Length: 158
Picture 1 (cartoon, rainbow, N blue to C red):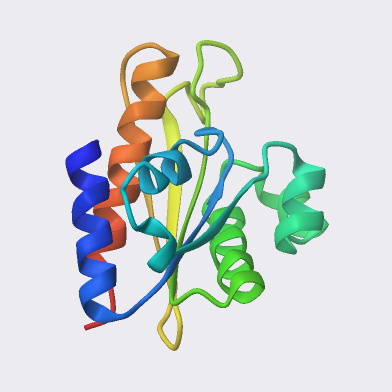
Picture 2 (tube, rainbow, N blue to C red):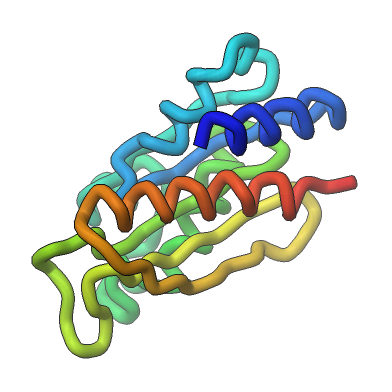
């Protein structure tokens, strides 16, 4: 994870770009991994931990209708989270994560390990993906952080 965060930082710094995060099930772990890199203040604007639906709405502008229609763990919500983080911080790229880390909270439709991601980049369509991770709560969260960091480098404008 440290290597991934370092690569994100090097890519952002060399491109002269900044990043922001909007996290739910990872509880700020992506931001923590990023800020563990010395000099990250040059390329990391900040992050949101929007665990509750109310926080997603007030902090990131996620619409109540979107939450009611799709649920917090959905493509529609992570897209609004990522775009809200980009809009609020002025960063060049953002990543958002919402998922069910488990062991509780899952359903047949959305089992534990279900995690949605979105990456928003200024001037480009927002990209999203759905992943299904296996393992205990910490393992699911760790895998989500790693995918979020990998996506930041993959979707960098360039």
